Each structure stands twice: as C-alpha cells, then as structure tokens.
Image 1: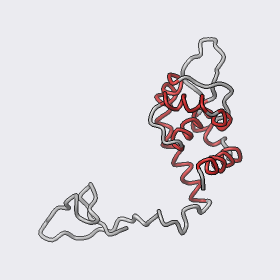
Image 2 (image 1 turned 135 degrees about the horizontal axis):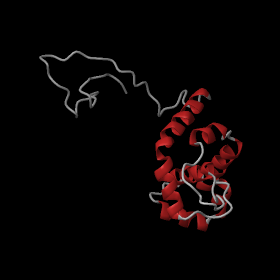
Image 3 (image 1 turned 30 degrees about the vertical axis):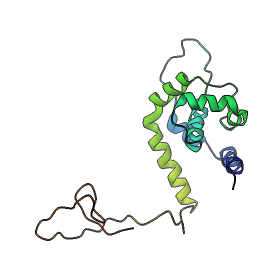
Image 4 (image 1 turned 180 degrees about the horizontal axis):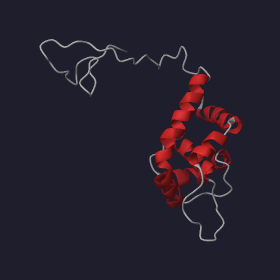
Length: 155
C-alpha cells in the first residue's frame, strides 16, 4: 500500500471517528485568550499531533513546514489556517499529560474492535514468576529478565 493510500485510510478513519470522548478528556483550555478570538480548537491541535506521529516528524517546526506543503493535512486536522510552531509547542506543553489518557482510550477502542486479535505483533505479556536459585539476581541480558528484577517467561 502506498503512502498516499495509507493517508487516505487514516483520513477516512479520522472523518468517521467520534471525537466527543477525546474532547472531554482535553477539556477546556486553562490559559486566557485576553479577549482574542480562539484560533484553534484543542481537538484540532491534537489531530496535528496524530499527523505528526503518522509522518514520523520529530519537531513542531518541521510539522508546520509539512502543513504548508500539503493542504490535505490542514483538512485532515480540520484547520482553516496553519498554526505556528509556538502554538503547537504551547499546546504540547499544556496538554501532553492528557495524551497518555487519550492513547489509553484509543487503545481500549481498538481492543474492543478486536483489531489486535490474531495480530503477529501482539503477544501475551502475563507476568509468570520464576524462582531464583541461590538468590541470584536477574541480569539485564538474560532472556525474560525485567527491570524490576523479576523473571518471567514470555514472547
């Protein structure tokens, strides 16, 4: 599947997705606009970070350049104008702690849709304790060793 076809599939998903739960997670902004009209909705700025992840972009300056290059990305994010990298950085700083909650919500949605069933990339990570001999500790290069010094069988 080519990159543009993948983007079309992602765009179709974005258009049909119910964004209300994510809007509720993001909530209202806590910073004052000081009488200015709010240019960007938090949900649309969040979509820019979905796009940033999809495009494998490392920084907000590059993301803004990509938004300038392809107006389909603006439509994808439901934006009428391109935000500055300062706006994106401010949004990221203020809302980054909520990204984890949003991605956990999205993971639950995908799991309920059975997206991960029969997927070669998923595995059972159930912790199964294994007794140590002579109080030996787990070495970080041992198969199945975890960082909290518990051993487990998996993969």
